[in-house]
Length: 459
Image (cartoon, rainbow, N blue to C red; front, top):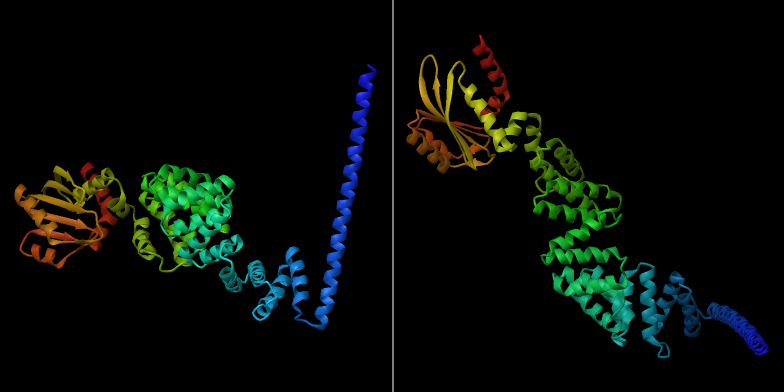
């Protein structure tokens, strides 16, 4: 028992002694740090006094420049090293490499990239393997869009510091801009390993996956980034484009609508393209009103963007004319139903019997027997859904169909224009060509004509 007391007591004394020693060292360290600060302050004052007498004294400039640099007083450091850089050209006692390196780094901090570039290029001519020189020159070349040069500099930087996340990321981004996605992919992955919260890296990784055909992996990342306040708009645009390619318009609309909420932190170019892509999806879904609202915003902000004006001109008319919208955009069943209504009301006070409906991707033919008080005949109606030009070959095919059925007449209706060759072909044949103006008149009155025919039939 006495032995245990002695041991415990001895350990207690040792702990106390250790605490005393540590406290003493901390005091000495603090005292030493304080002394260094006092010495630095003294050196700074002395150097500034000498500079009052001799403003370009190299030794004094080196002293104050070093203090400014260590304290991150970048404006003062930049001005000081600017003078030292000039003096270093004639004064051999000045460390030219260090002066130009610090001059370049300070210039970057005060947003003077041209001065930084010149200084760092000179520093690199003296020491080509310095990490700071290669890394910062690589970023400057990247910002200048000199991606080949940027990649070269950043490769050197990564050799000197293989675990520097930003160097890896910028090198990967350089390869991406050069279209070298396979080379970029491992660099971006490695950068993410060192900096997993770097969203820019994640976006670049998704871009690499997409370009390499790994679309599902790319989409997963883009969807993850949709809520990011700074990258969300670009990620939404990419996700939406993928969903369009996958024929998933509902998901694409959701992507683009989320993306438009990021307008505050996004570029006008991305927002314009987002609106355009969303408008095209809306048009595909026959939501013309929503599409037109977006297209009008684009035309106001960016007149002449793509085919926006042409789309507005085309779809404004569709938006106010329901039957025209059905004729041009609705599913096949609705289109054929409208064509039947036109056929049934084309000749007023007539009996119409529909014999056959032929539905092709290019057109719909409806073969009828029509009887009026004065005549009866077999007539074929051809409905063509296009705004473009209709050539002679289409009309020749129609004429062949008339001969096959032994129809007395053919009526071809379209919102497009018939070519001169098509018109000449019909001159000696019993084919009526109905273009947009006449068709629009029919579409505007077809419902009223049907109602009138129905009312007369009931009488």
